[in-house]
Image (tube, rainbow, N blue to C red; front, side, top):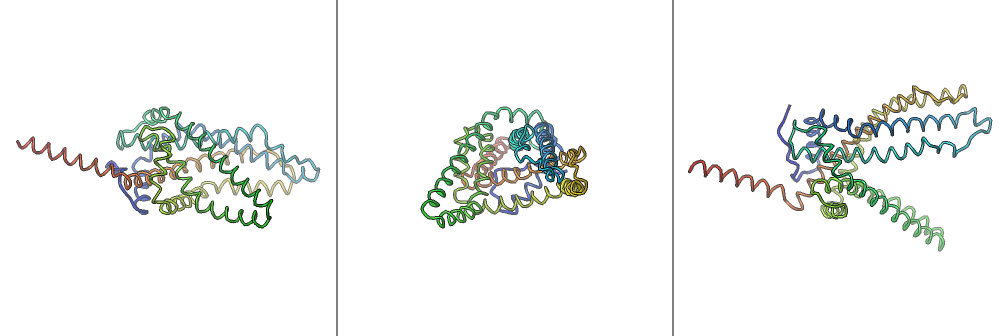
Length: 320
């Protein structure tokens, strides 16, 4: 196995970013996914199981038997299981993101083959406040943006309905353009905060700065990474999809709509692995961040020049 340490602070193009991500995963496959499963795994499992129960309840409540008896309450599915699923999903997302970036930081400190789960946990827990604070700040910014957009569309619709429709169409295409780079920015700022030991707002400013002249380059990488992960996710989710189709057909035939324990098991397992696989997206995003930061600041080049200078000075001293 290749144990050569990967230099993160290198400016990379499209192909190199994906190649180094694959190399990193191959080099650290066991310890990386081991850390993910042991640290973020419990929360991911809770989210997967609660999500499976929620889907099963939804299928049960919408069974043909209940529909014929007019016993369908569309709000009944939003019970304790639903809210547990939402909360667990948010926490598992933060745990997965934080663990992935904590592992990348630990890799730079320890090198390949020397990283333990406790190393990753130490970095993660040290940055828990930044992760939670960043999440609430990010959520607040999204709420403000949504409120502003809704008010603008409502105002235009009040003036002329056609303007509201036009604004909605423009907003749709605008989201397709703007969303990928900003999704990337609002994930890797956690990495920037961990790496440089800075506050959340400073980390957001830094990620915005490195992306400033690389908007479309970021768009391409994020979209391609998202498509690749989605394809892998579909493969892992296929058993759940097939089982769900079988269960729906069975419910139509017999009309029972009973909760299926096997479906909950299959759905939980598939969802768990789909969520774990999503960590690959964060790896790609992380390497793209390091690449843009190197283009902006050139810290990696300066470090390599300094190392060469130290080596040459050592050789001179030994010769003398």
